[in-house]
Amino acid sequence: MPRVTRAALIQCANPLPDHADLHKVKRAMIDKHVALIDEAAAKGAQVCCLQEIFYGPYFCAEQQTRWYETAEPIPGGPTIRLMQELAKKRGMVMVVPIYEVEMQGVYYNTAAVISHTGEYLGKYRKKHIPHCHPGFWEKFYFKPGDGGYPVFETPFGRIGVYICYDRHFPEGARELGLNGAEIVFNPSATVAGLSEYLWKLEQPAHAVANQYFVGAINRVGTEKPWCIGEFYGQSYFCNPRGKIIAEASRDRDEVVVADLDLDLIQEVRNVWQFYRDRRPETYTGIPRT
Image 1 (cartoon, helix red, strand yellow):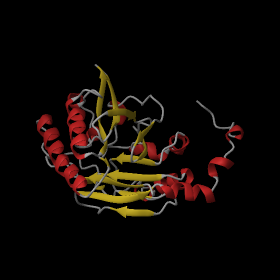
Image 2: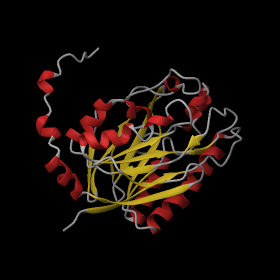
Image 3: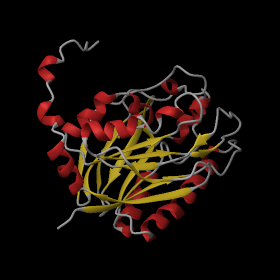
């Protein structure tokens, strides 16, 4: 039997530019996503991934402790519980990126993975934390992730997660492949300019080098009051040959759906034996510090 997974990516803009009441901002974004998740389910999606810290604006454009109030525990927080209910109701695996609090004063940029039965499967914490470009002050908010590069077994494929800035580092993408990932999702918040030319270069390259599917998600719109740039959307899926097979628009809320033929992974690996021919014992010149 062919192994085909229908997967969805959701990109959208923040509906409330006034950030005076953070709880209203968060609630509005969650409500907006619930409708888009229902749309993904109506289109037959079996797996759905949301954008980076989906329930708010990209608040790393400023350094303010008030945003700590929006963090939640994983599992057990209200947003993850809601998504577990939706996953079960829709029979859909969910990848849900939120702002995680582990304990008072310790926060992570994290994606929870939820099964189609509503079971919490685990989480991935963003490893690479930028703090080097105006408007991307992430070290103020996030501790570098621990827990390695997990891959989650689901009926619709083995799923891995990489988050935004992680995509600039091929080492973790390789570890996900070695750990058995068939679909790797990269939820992001990235603006036009500095790294836009890399958006359709790096992740298809990861797909080729590691011979799996990649789902790359970016939000849309310009978020006030910071206006650090245009979040340019263009969420997409690419296959193990690095070909983009479905792509969203640049400037509107959208649900991108694609059928991923997981049998293509074996077909590609039968031709390009990258895992057989890699020589980790020779890569001794890569320093660990």
